Structures are given as structure tokens and as C-alpha cells.
Image 1 (cartoon, rainbow, N blue to C red):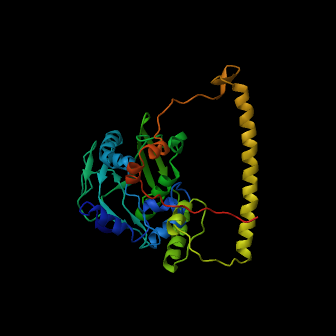
Image 2 (image 1 turned 90 degrees about the vertical axis):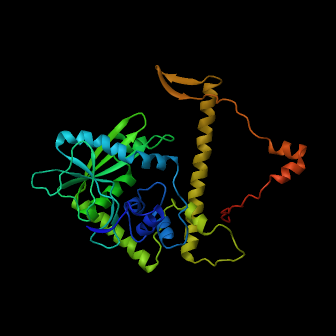
Image 3 (image 1 turned 45 degrees about the horizontal axis):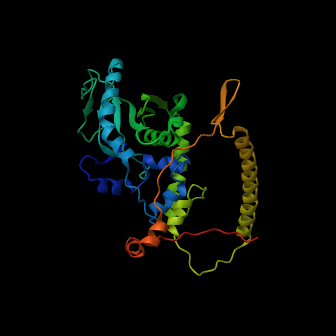
Length: 339
């Protein structure tokens, strides 16, 4: 691995600019189809400048950034019993392929008498050198979850790691040559969740092939296949319709027919679902719980009443004031397939 630059001396804008020059750990999940919020097509559209990545963070990400070091300090205390030290080395790394970049949270090292660097156990040690720490045994990725909203508890269930994080760890293993990654997540109500993943060489090679294919499409300006997880991104690229007409070919005709068939299937399933729900609502009546042999089958409870603003009544009572505080709401596009 090669050091591109230190990240502790960069502004966030400079760091984002450096990271945009290649494929980073947070991109791997989208490329492998493991990111529920971003597809490979959307990532391609962002990196080619067709759409802008407008996400600048939220409360959950700010909490994660603020707690990253304290969580690492806690885990350092646990690793001390194994004779392992946690090391912070804030650098942007480059792998064997120039487009593969990594910004690893922390490194787990084993101090020894032969080490040129001596690390203190039970705390996070800062490494200021341009060369890598000696005796790296694993990488350490810090995460938080369930702090804002429900989080992704299922992703951490049964000793697993959420797919996007798993892909990130695999990418870092490829760039650094360190195949073991410790994921430590402070999860609301569950405490520290610790997952140790060792990536096999075939798994890393699979990721490398997927990233090489994606990068090749970037260079050639060829879009990856859409998956359906990219509808919002496509909407950003084409927010408004024009008067233009596109002449379809046989491939597009086939897509339209397949779409119509699938929609008919979905509509039929939704109608059947409504019928079944109506029967369940009749059974429960005004009750709130239905049980079977003492176990809850389903519930149907009333929510609390809430207040809402009656815009129509306000406009009728105060038309001038309503006009003063009225703004134009952008329209949206509707897809309609001809019968």
C-alpha cells in the first residue's frame, strides 16, 4: 500500500476531492449491489458528474464521527488483554491498482521488543510517520447504530455484518493486504457489537474484478446496468420532461411489455392482499389483539390523535396572508404505459 496524503491536515472538502479520484471503501457496497441506499449506476452517475451527491451528513453520521475515537479507546482496553494495541494512522492509502483508495479508521498492531515503534496497550496510539506501523495484525472499523431511529439491527444479527460495511472491509483488505478486519459497533440498547471477519483471497479477488469492471466503465463512460435501486438518481438526472418524442426499438418494446405484465401481477397481488386484510379486520372488530393458544397472532390498535394544519380553511379565511406564505411546489413525472 502507498500513502497518497495524510488526512488529518485536509479539510473535509479536500478529503472528498482526493477520495473522488478513485474507488473508496464506501463505494464497494454499491459496486457489489450490497448498498441499500446507492446502486452502482448511481455511483457511476455521481463520479461522471451527471448528478451531484447532495448527501452532506445527518445526525446519525455526526454522532458516528464524534464517537469514533472514544469507541476505539474502549475497544483498545479489551485488546490489551491479548497484547494488541490500537493505532491511529490518518492517511489515504492506494492499493496495487491506482484507483483503489482506502481511509482505514484504525490499525491493530502487536508490539514486540524488535519493533521500532512501541505502542501502549489499552489506548489509541497516534502514528505520525509516512511509513506503515510495524506488525499490523488487523484493521479496525468503528461504527454506530440505533442512535437515531431504529437502525439496522438485522444487519448485525447472528454475528453478521451489514452488507455495505462487509464490502468496505473487503475493499480495505484488498488495498492494505491485511485480510482480517475487526468491526466494532456501538449499538443503541445493545452495547459494543464486535465482529471479526477474515476475507479469503477468492473473495478479495471477486471484489477486485467487480471494481475493475466498474472503473473500466467509468473510463469508457459506459453506464452499469440499472437495478431499480436507482430510480431517485435517474429522477435527479432527468427531473422534468420535454416535448421530445423517442422512437423505440424492439428491445424497448419488450421492456414495456414485461413491465406491463409485472405490474398486472403486482396489482393482482395487491387486490388479494386487500381482501385478506379485510377478513382479518372483520375478525378483530373493535378489539386490539388476536391470539392463538395464548400467542399473539396480530394486532390492530388505534394511534393517538394528532393535530394538523388545515391549509384550505386558512386560505379561505385569510387569502392575502395565505398568498404571502405560498410557494411553488415542483412537479414530478408520472410513468404511464399505454394499453
